Every structure is written in C-alpha cells, then in structure tokens.
Image 1 (cartoon, rainbow, N blue to C red):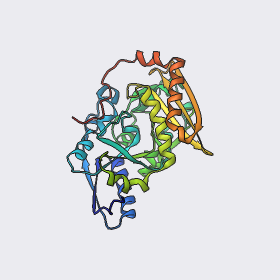
Image 2: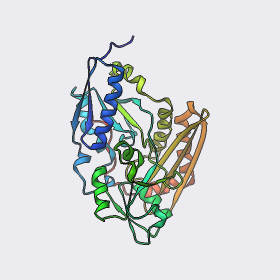
Image 3: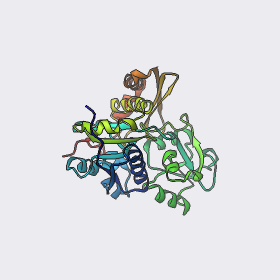
Image 4: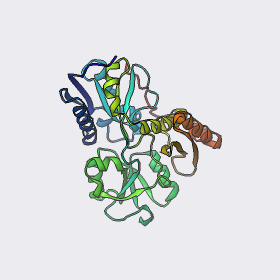
Length: 321
C-alpha cells in the first residue's frame, strides 16, 4: 500500500554549518516532492561537537556525531535524521536503518593553503592539519618530511586556524567546502591515488526507525541507486575490517558501464606501511565486491596492522541505550 502524503516531517540535524546545509538540502528536496508537507528542522548539539580538544580516535569515534539525533528519533521528536554518510557507523542495527542515500557530491579530499598549490611544494617540516588518521597516514607515506598535526572543529574553525598561521596547509573533504560555497579556497584536489577517501565520503544519508515503512516510501524518490551501491561496497570493506577512527582505512567504489570497482586501503598510522586492494564486478554484487577487497587486504597483511593498533576509545555501537 502507498502511504498517504505526509502532513509534517521533522529532520534532526547537528548544529554545525555543514550539517545544517545538508538538512536544509533534504528539506528542500522533500518540499519539492510534497508541497503540502510542513518540513521542520530539529537542531541538536552532539557530544562529538562538544569535544574539540582531542582527536576522534581518542574520544570514541564518529558515532559521537549521531547518538543525540537517534535519541530524537526514538522519542518521537524527529522523523528522520540527515548525516554525512562517512559519519554513520557501519554496524548499524535495529531499530535504525538508512532508507535513502542521496547522490554523492565530490568524493575527493582537497588541499587548502595560503602558501602553496600542492603538498609537494611544502618544505620539510611544514605543518599540515587534518582530523583524519586516514588522511594522515597517506600524507606521511607520500611526504614523510612533512609534519601532520591534529585539526578539529567545524569547517570555519579549521579555515580560521589555517589563516592565522597555525598550519601551512590543511586537508578537508571537497564536498563540504563546495556545499558551503567555499570552493574558491581549494588549491588542489587530491586524486584517489594520492588520498583514497573515507567510505561514504561526499554522500548524505537519511536515517530513520526501521519500523517507519511510511517514511521509507516517502524517501524512496530521494535515493540514488548508484551511490547506494557504492556505499554498500565501501561500508562492507569498513565493516569487515572493524573500521573506526582508530584505523587508517579508506574505500572508494565507482560505477562505470554497469560494473562497479572498489578500491580499498589500510595503512599504519605513521605511513610506514600502506596496503591496497581492488575488486570489480556487477553492480548487483556491490556488497560482495567490498568484502572481496577487504579479504584481499587481510591476505596482504592488514590483519597485522589492525592488531597492532591500540583499542583506545573504540567506536561505540550504533545502538542507543
């Protein structure tokens, strides 16, 4: 049965500028689909937004950005939540689900600097800022003479730290800069060969309670089949390898001519070892292809890397208790 047109929908969102942009984007899409529906935002502050003096790998991982939003889904204050897909833990379990993953923006990492146009131009000892162990490991592997230092805060805060001279360059997700109208700050896009992105990077995911079948029907037109397939492959890699903020792990899937290719990477945090894998096949086998890539990584030595990383602040379960 087709659910009747919704009269009102509430979207839970973080309070950061980028999160609000994403929620407003989803609100606009829903308003276009259902003009008579009243679509509201419920703005919340998460623990991940509150703790800015430590890296995510030390405070519990990306799940800290969504727990408060999930509580709002459970207690009925919100119908759905809008997330950056890369912030959604891969071990999602009932009562939560992702009924729609929107078409992906640019998946690449971007270099932002007031001094240089590429990482290769930076002198030895120059400080590069990033919030990601994944980026850090890949930068250290390719440019061992550079210093990589932690960089937390929203996009505006990170840019301000660069502009006051705390860093010679910083690396951010290109999609976030573009969505905030800051594409002009990008000095260079880092290719996937130089900086393989995080699983789900550039995509917006909508989360809801699994029992809300009405929402699944209403949200179905927003879902991108291609991005969803890529996300299945990328998140399968991360799930098989126990992906969390403690692990320098990357995965990127792309669809071309009906086939899907997934590239995956695991590295030591200091960049001393980088292991890569690739799998290709039909789009319908996306999740299996991600598992194949993860299996190849494990066979090449990723297990030793994973076992050597201290289990500090492990990524919390996606269940709300």
